Amino acid sequence: MAASHLAVLLMLAAAVLSAAPVARGQAASAPAPAPAAPKTITAILTKAGQFTKFLQLLQSTREAEQITNQLKGKSSSGGLTVFAPPDNAFTALPVGTLNSLSDQQKTSLVQFHVVSMVMPASQLETVSNPLRTQAGDTGPGKYPLNITADGTNVNVSTGVVNATLDGTPLYAGDRLVVYQVNKVLLPWALYGPAPAPAESKKKKKAAPDAAADAPAADTAAGTTASEAARGVRGVGAGSWVAVAVAAAMWWAM
Image (cartoon, rainbow, N blue to C red; front, side, top):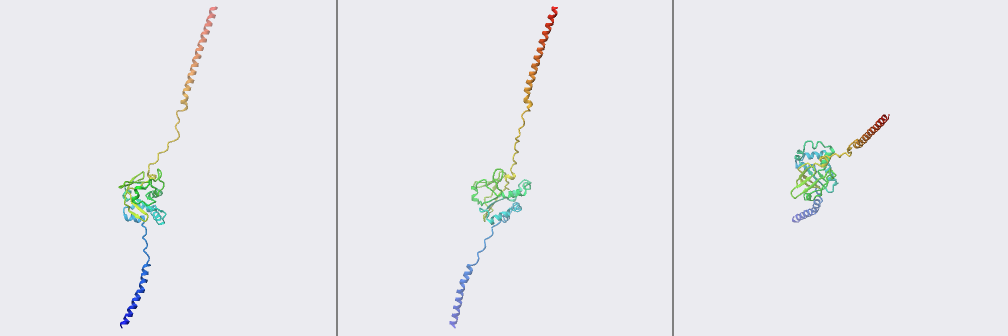
């Protein structure tokens, strides 16, 4: 009886030992969890709150979708940095500031808040100005953006407005950095002073030619008067000669 019990126990132990590697193999081959999907600019700003106006612009211009596609498709190898103005920055704008823009200009305005590279806080002091945004040309009268930092404050200048950047990002990761900026970044190309009209190349005529000819006319008039005076004097002398001849003849008679 004891022998049979021992045999049963040995059989059970063998079964357990043979099954253990299979279990270990199954555990080792379990698939790793899928990496979390990168956060979108829409999700980041929605979670942060107080960015309703900027979100509306991002969506109406389809720039939110564009940013997501750039990050997914890795078309922006250096990543992206977004400067997001809160709702009170839009409220502070003069009436009609946005309504006066065309759809294309609104797109350029949003693109002016996006830089095609990752800019962590540690690099804000060494950025090369003017900074090129997705709005394009940084030349005079276009879309120049300048960032200066003194260790405490980070200032952003567009030539139209001077804004302050919160040095602590709202979000940093997945090749995307999002900062809060206290003003809407108005680009020079859309809001800069209108260029002064060019001066007409046509110069006014100096004085009329008649004025230049006046001295000549006066001279001619003076010459005519002199000649007339000489004529009168000539006629006067001839008359006296005639009178003298007539008197002589009378006395001869």
